[in-house]
Length: 118
Image (tube, rainbow, N blue to C red; front, side, top):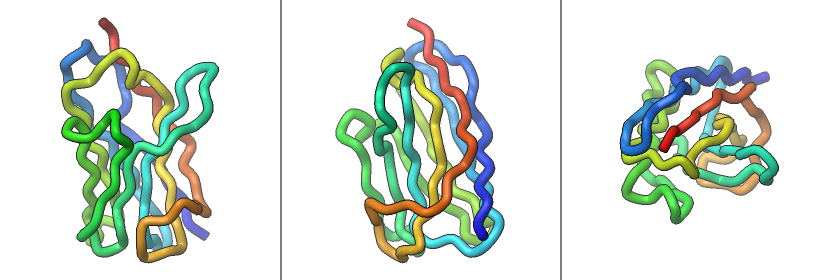
């Protein structure tokens, strides 16, 4: 069983930065970040393979967000720069049983709130 705990959310002004962390217990493979804004469906943000050698991003965050992982700490990060009010959402960490970037995730964290003021 894999447990995921996110941290690092908060309130920031537009143009600011935040770094989210996702600490995993148990063996993890590819990992992803998702977000859900009020009244909207959950959407994909970024993903990273088990090796960390390949990443994928949703178009609206490309060039602003960076996903990375430290396998020695079993932790995945999401560095978010140039934040916009439309980035406001609950951000969720997820783990897949696949070594490669997948559209199926088996484990989810509880979420961390990110709020960006204009």
